[in-house]
Length: 367
Image 1 (spheres, rainbow, N blue to C red):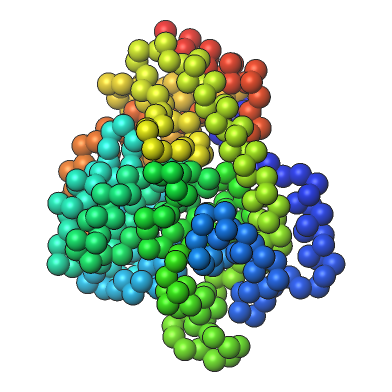
Image 2 (image 1 turned 135 degrees about the horizontal axis):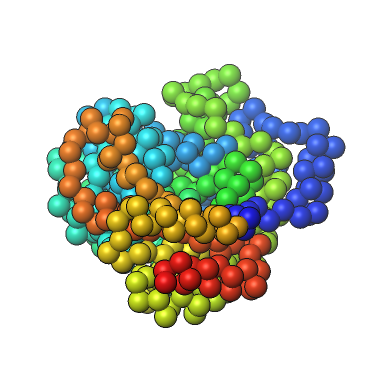
């Protein structure tokens, strides 16, 4: 089976872990051990941010951002429904209301026009997602946020190395959240990072990461235990150095996939719009005009032939049982995409021969 994603782990990561184990320092009471601090510094530099706060998962990063921003019961947060549930989950955990808006059918990212229409007096934040590795259209979102005094919390969990308007992802946001889950462009196994240029917010989130403590056993505010272990940070330092090569290989595989599939008139292939740089976390194709059953049959046929095709996201969040209580939403582009998209392997472990095989198999199934 050619997996949809596969962590690229080598001897360097193993050596880094062993070095941490031998050091005897495997965590830190305030979540700021030597490897964590080193990883934070390197990642902040990579994304051109003033501060980076390492945490134990991408979801923890999202939750800490929401908590740090002071989102509370009675507040509203605007976000897409066509994404992983964690984006909405952390809003609900804070007691706030997730307000779902539709996507652009070409990029699958949140529509700025729909965002502005959803703003109310209760709106406190906008949470755009850089889906599949393509940055959201952040400049108009930033203009909307400035107009209404809203905070932007960008979910960049899938967009390591992506760029927008010539700048690293996150430049237009107040807070940016990253994931290092095993499937991501770089991994620490589990793990996450928050980046920001806001000094006050960064300090607050560092306290909240460790039970609200500035000093050990002296809690200043309500917090959590979101420490990133030293082992994870050590892996992250190595993976970050390898990330440019990983991204180059993903880009190469995506380009070859597009060359192979562009003759298929029934497919909408992923685009890299002018001013955008895709990180190619996923190579997502769309069966134009198809219903869910046809798409699902093709996915199953691909798997039977040893290709780990996946569907992200077959059930939009607003259609999930728990989230229906937040209201009825008519999101036609979201619902249409959820029935038509499927993702193909494009990670650095996929060979040129496998890319050809994947493309030829897709074309044969389309008839």
